[in-house]
Image (cartoon, rainbow, N blue to C red):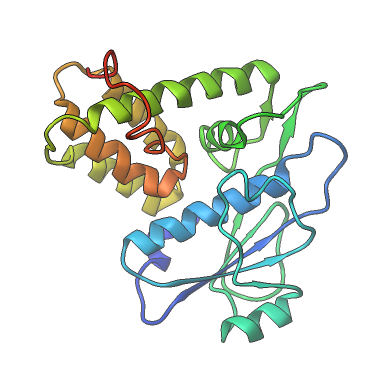
Length: 239
């Protein structure tokens, strides 16, 4: 498996290209999953202080913007992208074996909405579900899972709004380091989400430290966990 960290150092921008496959029928979320993986990789690299340039081949994914995916810097064929980005991408993300363009490639497993799942609602809930599984494992998204993810996001956003009212405390350094190591080594977003679940339930951690850690890690996860700050009552969210 590719060690992502090997591509986080270097001079100049890191060029990343996401190759979106044609949708394999209704409910196919593989294209969105490829874009999400590229989006997370770009966020990880940017947190390391390195600039990122992104490209995208293949069809547009209608839900990508609602799911928090940043627009690509260039779109088109691999050749057009290399020209627009000032050089060939160093990392290619695709759902199938990739033979062109050079660089390292990350293969993303397929994702589908099972049965007649209705994915209407908070697209960030779908983002959460896709990030909650290793990118190299297939995933089926159900309506029940989407509803559960929406509830969890609402709970976390209320909690973060409450924690933000408390005195700031340092990040939980050990947890953040573990999360960062997993992201830089293998884009392990599922491990980061496990860390957040455990942190939210830990009554021994000050609210200010929870806030700082959630806010910092959400810069990679892109779940908009801080968007309720200043809107929701803090009562009941302080733990």
